[in-house]
Image (cartoon, rainbow, N blue to C red):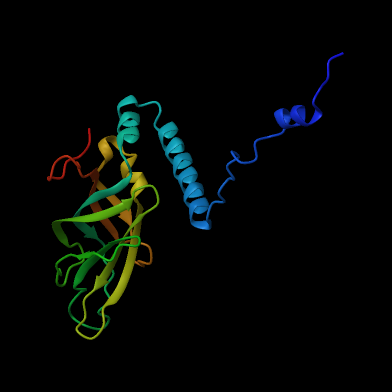
Length: 205
């Protein structure tokens, strides 16, 4: 008869508890980072699908990293600027402030004195850390030595600039929210990213 060592058999079939590696629990920050990455990926997929009929634009969208980019803003002109100097002979002294969501760096145009339809043709470059989520905000103001008067504002999703043909928007009119006279601001906008292998700034193609 065959004698079976029950203890030896049990040892062979028992799991190796010493070699089992316990799974490390993820921190709240790691879980949030994973969720944000999923949301960004979903948004990128949606953007790509939106422009799927235009092959070259799709390729541009896919090649961007959407991190540490730049937004070139050319302030062209404005029309029908509200007159905030009520009861005075002069008109609004108009200027524009620019900022990107969560960025400390801001830009400001020159002041166009006594203008209803001011012209600037001034260019600014703003940092964009995450093109899929950040927003460009313009504040249109009437300069006053005591306190500036707000005429209105414009908000532009950076993702909409990325999604444009060649990530470039030319001479587009934006309605100024808060204006009572139908003020519009005209802008050129371009999104590009820094070439890490080159010290210069180049748009990825």
